[in-house]
Image (cartoon, rainbow, N blue to C red; front, side):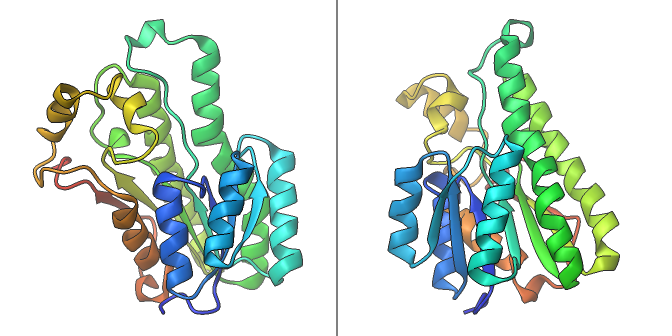
Length: 246
């Protein structure tokens, strides 16, 4: 029960890694707001863990304002924020990615962190405590070809994490990120281009431990970094990747 009585917002919490984080947080005693563009999915997960749900487009400032207000109305504070929601473009040569896809990837993967800082950071600064966790990717550490702008957006998240950590440390707010390898989530087929046994074998060959990451893996790592057990850890990008970045 490492998160007993903590309050947490988890974006993209209706499925995949986000759902794994929500379930682990709730299992460790946290009160969780599940935010997702999929309102029905968010409601289902929140109901299962005794949390609350909100429909949210993380690329929209007004949605961040509403979710922050909802959390404060419900709990009066925000102890943990997990910026998990993310998207990718399909694998293709960098020059062939349509501009609208580039804009969409950067809006969801990068600008969302900016919006979160505008609304949640002031709450944590006033409280003098808080933990922010950005879910980046091994793509930002060791990029794969043909996912260029997705790679770049996750590299941005890693750098943003370190910059946020340096600035917010004197205010008692820690900021870290997770760098998962491709996992058993709804985005897996998009990363690979096609979900076939041959393509899975190709990706798995790059992971020394020989398997994809799972929502359970991410939930465990997120729980540690957002708990008081990690009170001396900030600005870290933790690879949850089975050794891919070695």
